[in-house]
Length: 215
Image 1: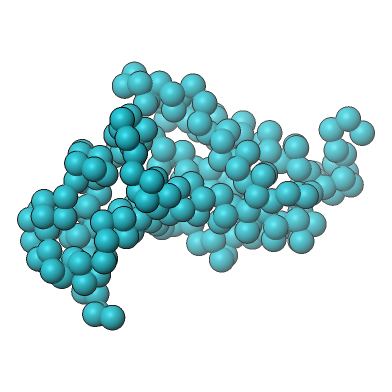
Image 2: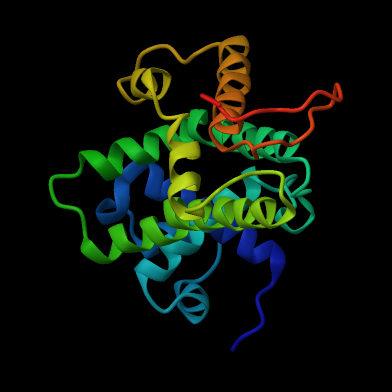
C-alpha cells in the first residue's frame, strides 16, 4: 500500500532488468538490485513482496516501454493493416533488442528454470502480448474488417511469424537481420495475415471487391 515514487521505481526497474538479463533469474539478487538502483532492499520488498513479483514487473516494464507508442485502446479495428503494422513493428523491435535476446538466452539456457519465474515470465511477456493482439482481432472481427474465428490462435500465429530464422540467428549470437530485411519481413507478415483473414466481399482501397483465397 506504500505509494510508489516514479523516479525510484524507474531506477529499480532498470536495475532489475540489468541483473535479470546478465545473471538470469536465479543469479540475480535483490541485494545487488538494491545496490545498483540506490533503493533500499526494504523499500523494494515493500513494492514487490517476492523476487517473482519483481521479475514479472521487470518483464512488463520492458514490454510497456517498447510498446509505448502503441495505444491498444486507440487502434482502429476498421484499419487492420495499420494496426498490425504498428504491433508487428514494435514486437519485432522488442525481439531484436540486445537485452531481450540476452534475457532469453539466460532464461532458456538455464539448467533448471524456477517454475514461479517461468510462469511469471510467460504471463507478463508472451501471454500478455497474445492477449492484447487477440483483443484487437476480436474488435476487427466485430467491425467486419477481418474474419477471425479464433482470436487467441490467430494472435499467437501472427506474433510467431516474427520468430523465424532471423530470431534463431540472433539467439545463436550470429548477425542480426538488417533494418531493411526486418521491414520486408514486417510487410510480408502483415500481408500474409491479412490474406488469411480477409473478409469475403470487403471492398479494397481501389474500389474493387476483395475475394477470399481460393474463391
